[in-house]
Length: 310
Image (cartoon, rainbow, N blue to C red):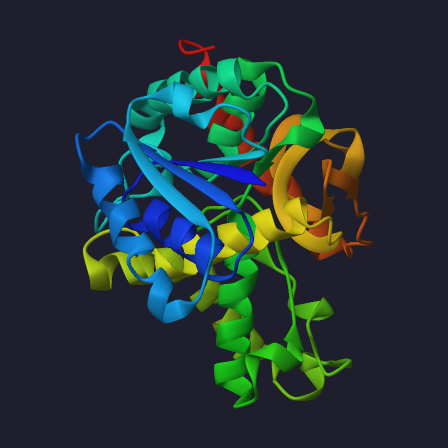
């Protein structure tokens, strides 16, 4: 199975490395506009194969879309990353043109590919990719929910002092500091509600830390994170290529689901060989419904800035 990762920065290279190390894809193409960057990252990854034992082939190229031909999955990480104090939303004007160009160029050589969008603001870039390519809605997926849910589980584990892998939790809504919705009510520890172990005040603190999880890392690192996001992308791609049918919160196009139309936003989905196999209807309570409606409206307002690009 072949995966193309467009953008060989920290995030894209980490994604390629995890895809290779975990033997998720047999062939991985890294593509970037900066001369030599993708080639260098691919060479570095390949030289780790003798000590890690993977057999995947990773190659890099500079702006050569022909090398991406017949990709099964295309991951778009292109665009500038966040800097300290910058919101994901502020990246719209810069990244929209880049993402549209990348998506349409790759589509020429891989018309049957499933697209995974990582570029920020992710919900808006997912919507842009869907509209610019004309692909069926099941074939364009925004990654954000997988990452946000992973961060949510981390903060829950820290608050409970329990292993992360024993905790199940999800984040829905927009992939933004003010639009994501950590579903504390539905989070569980080995099948028991986390509300059994944490007070409302503790859960609110966990939710708040989750929502600014990306900004926290940007402030510490001076740029966007990459290990967590890169691994989250590989996790999502794994479910596609190996038809695992995992339930993963993803930004997908809603056409009546959750009472919403014509917007891409995070909801739990069954992810398999066809991309989005099913959108799962979680029965939200009134408070969660209100938060989701506000999140949808915020994302919809951001999408208005795409009029000049679409």
